[in-house]
Every structure is written in C-alpha cells, then in structure tokens.
Picture 1: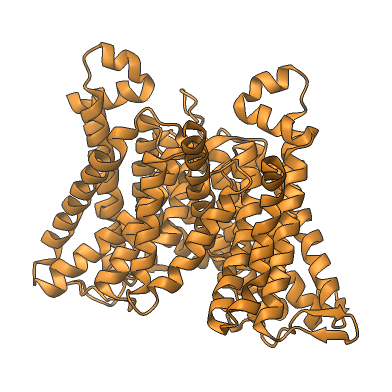
Picture 2: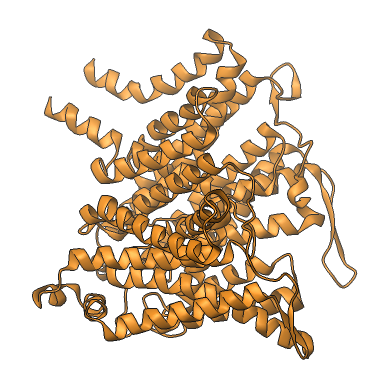
Amino acid sequence: MDQALQHLVNGTVLGGTYALLGIGLTLIFGVMRVVNFTHGELYAFGAYMTYAFVSLLGVNFFAALALATLCGVALGALIELVLLRSMRKADIDSVMLVMIGASLVLQNGEMWAWGGVAKLVPNPFNGSPLVFGPVSVLPLRLFVLVVSAALLLGFWLMLDRTRAGVAMRATFQDPETAALMGVRIGWVNTATFAIGSGLAAAAGALLGPVFMVSPTMGDLVGLKAFAIVILGGLGSLPGATLGGFALGFVEEYAGGYLSTEYRDAFGFLLIILVLALKPQGLVPAKERIG
Amino acid sequence: MNTRLRNAAPWLFPLALALVPLVFPDPYLLAVLTSAGIFIIGAISLNLLLGYTGQLSLGHVAFFGLGAYTSALASLGFDIGIGFGLRITLQPQPVWLGFIAAIIVAGGFGWLLGRLAFRVRGAYFVIITICFAQVLRMVALNWIELTQGPMALISIPPFSLWLPGQGVVPLYSKAQNYWLVLGVAVLAFIVVRQLVESRIGRALVALRANESLARSVGIRVTHYLIIAAVVSAGIAGAAGSLFAHYVRIVDPDVFLFIYTVTMVIMVITGGKGTLWGPVVGGLIFGLIPDLLRGRAAPEAQWVLYGVAMILFVMFLPRGIVPALASLKSRA
C-alpha cells in the first residue's frame, strides 16, 4: 500500500510535465492541423538552454528556467514563420514530412553543438527527500510539480480569459468563420505554435535538472507526447491534461509492478490499443479533427 | 529501333550495374553500393504504401528489423523459455530458409499492423505505425534471452548459394554480396511493378485519389490496403535479412526511427508513386554518407537530409523522376 502511494506521488510529478507536453502538442494540432514532430526537440532545446544559462553563463537557476522557456517560444515562432506559414494550404502528410525534416535538423544541430555526452544541470535544491508519512519526494521534484501545475493553470486562464485566448479557441473550432469574424489567422497560428513550443521547452527545462540533458532526450519524449495526446483524443485540451497524468500513472504503476524494462513500451502499447479500439480517445474532442 | 531501344532500356540499367564489380573491383565502392542497395530495396517496398496507396507509414523499419532478427535467429538457432517450464528450441537452419522465414514473418506482421492501423487514417495511422516500430525496438532491447538485447546478435553466417561446379558456398566476397543484393533488388522491383500494374494496383491508385469514391464503386479498400501492406512488409523483411547476413551483426538499433526516415527521404526525393523514384532517391541518399565521410561530421549528414526533405516537400513535392519526365515530354 505504501508502495502504491509512493507510485501515486511519482506518477503525479511525471504526469504534470507530461501534461505540459501534451497540451502544447494538442493545441498546435487543434488550431493548425499540424502534427508537430519537432515537439520533442523543443523539449530537448529547453533543457539545453537551461544548462547553457546555468552552467555556462552563471545565470540564477529560476531565471534560467524562464529564459529557456522564452527561447523555446522564440524558436517556435521562427519555425512557424519560416516553414509552416507558406504551407497552410498543404495537405497534412506534406506538413508532417516537413516537420520530420525540421526535427532531424534540430536534433542533429543540438548533437553538433553540444556533443553526445549527457550534461548535468546543477540546481539549488536540497538533495535529501522530504518525508510525508509513508511517501518521500525530492524537493526538486516537488518544485517541478508546482511549476507545471502553475503553468497549466496560467495557460487555462490565458485561453479562457484573454482576447488572444478567444481568438485561439475560435480558430480551433472553425478557422474560416474565425477569419470572417476578423481573427488574424496567421498571427493566431504563430502565437499557437510559439506557445505550444514554449510549453514543451518549459517541460524540458523543468525535467532537465531531474534527469540528464542529452541530444536524444527528445526522441522518446516526442513520441510520448503523441501518446498523451492520443490517449486524450487528438485536439482535446482537457484530454491532453488527463492523458498526461494517465501516462504518468501507467508508466509508474506498470513500471513498478509489471516490468521495469518495458516501462516505456507500455505507453506505446496503450496508444496502439486506444487507436485500434477507441480512435476518438478517452475524451473525444467536440470538433473531431484529423 | 527507337521503341526497341526504349523497351530494352530498363534492362540495360541493372545489366550495367551487374558489370560494376568486373570493371571497378574496388571493395570500398562495392561495400557502399551494397549497403545502398539494401536500403533501396527497403525504399522500393515503402513506396508501395507511401506512393501507391498514399498511406504515410512511418513504422516501416519495423519490418526491416523483423526480417533481420528472424533471419539471424533462424540461422543461429535459439533456445528460449516461454513460461510454464516450456522451451522452444531451434537448431541453426540454412541461411536461405532464414531468408524465406524473414519474408513470411515480416509479411505476417504487416498483415497484423494493417488490420490494426487501417481502421484509421491520416495522423492516427502515422502514429500507430511509429508506435509499432517503437514497441518492437523495446522488445528487441529487453527480450535478452532471444535477442541478446543491446549485446546484439553476432557471428551471423553469411549468405550461401549453390553455384554450378562449386556446390553450396558461403558468400564472403564483396562482389558476391553485391550481386546478391542487386538480384533481390531487381526481383523486388519486378514484384512491385507487377502488383501496381495489375488490378490490385489500379484499385490502390483509385483509393489514393479518392477513397470514398473508390469505396462507392465497390472497391474493397481495406482488403487492398492490407494486400499492399503484406507485400510491402515482406519485401522490407527480405531487405532486413540481406542486411543481417551482410553486416553479420544485428542490434536493436535496426528499429530506429531514423532508418524509416531515411527510406522516406529516398522515396520522396526520387518520386513517390513512380517505379524508378525509390531507385533514384536511394542511389542519391545511399551514396551521400560516403561522399561526406571524412569531410563532415555525421550530424552534418543528418542535418543535410533534414534540409533536403524540407526543400523537396516544399518545392519539388512530386520528386525527381516525375520532374525529369515532364521536362523530357516538354522538350
């Protein structure tokens, strides 16, 4: 039972960052109909930028997290402007291929720039775990959970309360009608891709110090982001949040009780099953996309 | 005369290629061409799905890897426990049997994946196929009793063939392996050509153009898609088997996404949905790594591949072969 509680805590921490990743990806898909293969690379980019700011430039850890996220936003905006803007009328498969090309460039660019050796990001947190009755959690992980929860909340408020959020939701539902109502779709797309990328970079910046930073760290994560989004239903924002936590728990419990080696495989098996049996996902988006 | 020449032209190309080891007996050149050839077979098989059915299958390396492991394991033999105290034991088999087993196993998994994945289209299909390859990679990494995991399967025997006057001999030389790969590539090309020029091929092209319309005139869409998936997977399995017995070491990295991407780039740049597209694209991208070797970091090669993919999709989406063909017809 104690072990089950501990897995619950670990799963929640993992799930929070997964939810950040999933929300970004599903938002981009929902608004732009783009399957974003660069998402995992932006995650890695966020982690590397944190490393660069903290270890190379000596910036304060918390400021470095914020700066890394901003760099992710900027890179996302750049990708949208250079590659996606001219492909808005292209079919979904062509856009996927372009994004795969972009992820090859980003990943190998990172490998080129940083070398293949994994990097450690120093953090100011105490290394000994906090103990709450039967469960214990590292302060750094608790911090990761709190920040991801705050980012998720902030994102929801932005989407729900601001004019930009309304424009995004309108484009999400029906781009043509939104354009007729005076929404500037081009800028909504840029903002969407930038924010989604920023969330991925934030997840990388947060998890970089927990694990190690390596050029291939984005590979598995990019696929996991797809798993999350599909679990929740492609294009469903509540679904992505739920899917993030669901994948966190599945990995944690299946890894703990069934098999550590196959821990990462469970997520992919889950996607194949969900897609084969219930393709609309656990929380079907009201507007079916794709 | 002119038409006669044109009819003969497709046969002159493989004939010219067959003469390469006699004219340039450089082992390095032959090694490069052989590995390019193995990937070209993979690209030919991918083109059947990507080009003729229009389904963006991004888990294609799964069948390549399955073929490589099946063939390697059949020729090495294995002895594994399957629970309840039962064991499966296989004595080492001749390599040609492994080659056939590779085609059958890969084709069988192609059928299975087809049944699962063709229930959905577009982004969903793409993601199922990627996940399928990932799951197989995890199995290859972790089922150590069977696959040796990251320690890899080693000492895989080379291909052996019956040659007149010499009996069954193992193919150790570069030239022999080169001819073998060339032969299988020509066979794969012919199989795909016969398929796409048959009734099945016309059904595939019809459903690529407009699936609802194809369905409405009575084409059994899923049935034909699965036929294409099985044939495509079987050919990829054959390529995997060639790879296993040529390189003679197989590790879980044969399932890496990057190899699928390599085959996709070959098909896209050459021209998807054309018979010669994967051959042209495969020659270009099979030879680039070796032209760059020593001049640029390996990462630079992948960056170049990524840029090429972006530029081709954005500016020459139909690929080199159709572009050349339209230039020729205009002239």
